[in-house]
Length: 368
Image (cartoon, rainbow, N blue to C red; front, top):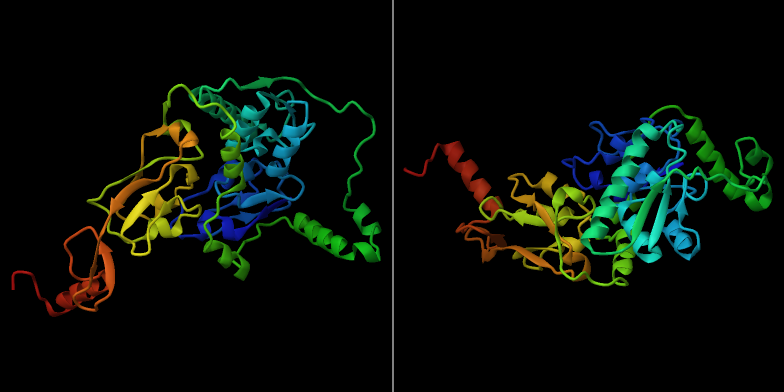
């Protein structure tokens, strides 16, 4: 069953967030965002394909019985290179781009078993996503000049042994209650109640989630990607690829004429890709830490920050922090508070707003 960690969802960072990737990819309509602050989930409708967790930029969604990180390590250690929904994943769409590329460069070759997609009830959403992931990963590997291959084949894998894995069902777990398993059974019971509830369950931020909001966290998939990239040979030249061809990171441009030094972009950035110093005198950007969640663009009222139309593969191999803008730091003539600005203003934003309100109230104009 799918679980949402509300504190990791980028929608919890700002009401202006437009992220709805989980809702868009869900093949059964079990996830609804609409105008809600956080996604609502119908656990009864969820088929646990894991596609939502793969497209979530900050790993806010996860499955109870499948972890892409755990799968990564098991798959790397396994001699086989086949990935199939009948063998080792709930759906190939449950794998994110970064893990796919990381596994490919370490295994040299991986195979997607697409043989079961044609008769699958969720193929209308998941199959196009798998194909899209395959194309993006292959394109990036080519740009990296890496010989690793990702193959798409109709293997139609089936388990050879006749002994089926013993899995608990709703009737079995009720009969398995004992003193040693009370806590586990209680948890399972609560899960079954959620599954049986055929309605959207709204999520809210708890105290533990609020603590997560203050942390700058690098997703596990990015850590694995960075580790894998460090083990491969650098390309003969660093290629520049189109920004639209890469979904998990980006490069930024900032219009100094539009920027108001409001600090919102780097305050809400969940991964710490956008940063400043203690004086708030600048905005720096680390492309390798960017998860392309778009929250910085969503909160920027004057649209000062935009996506670069291209991405340099050099950032994978030689990450470098870029300076987007530098501000003037001065004391406010009115309240003596230190503030940053890229204009000649001598009043901080609060005093400037109060001054403008007072002028409007008294009908004072600049030419008076």
